[in-house]
Image (cartoon, rainbow, N blue to C red; front, side):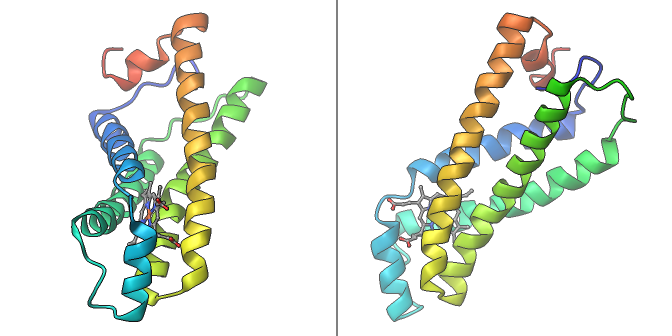
Length: 161
Ligand code: HEM
């Protein structure tokens, strides 16, 4: 989903895959979060079973890594080409929306868990579903670039180009 010239530095590649792995981890390690959350709302010292503890701390790590990723991205930004295609512009918007959601989803979860705002649990889950749809769209676009357009996009994010 990138234009032809852009390549990624090591920090960008490591952060990209680390964030992807942690988000997928938290998507699957979330069983019983609703129950743990209700216990936690009744008494903030409870609800920390193994799954809930992993979910909360891995999710907090995602916030830190996404902030770092945004800083690295801003620092490594190449000058924009005047002739960016429509596809490049759509790609940029999708990426920026994805960054926003990767930051907001765990922040909404943390707001529910630490501040005890019940409705934020629902907001967290709705935003998470939108984010996972965007993640699938992003992965499909990366595969389309790699195997249909054959522009090596996936190889760039694997550090091979
Ligand atoms: C990017 C990271 C995250 C992902 C992908 C994610 C994913 C999920 C998923 C899939 C559920 C639904 C569980 C179910 O109903 O079976 C959930 C629920 C929940 N998550 Fe997360 N989560 C993330 C980060 C966090 C963080 C950082 C916290 C708190 C510090 C958190 C707190 C919660 C809570 C409290 C619920 C239950 C909400 C409710 O039932 O109303 N999550 N999360």
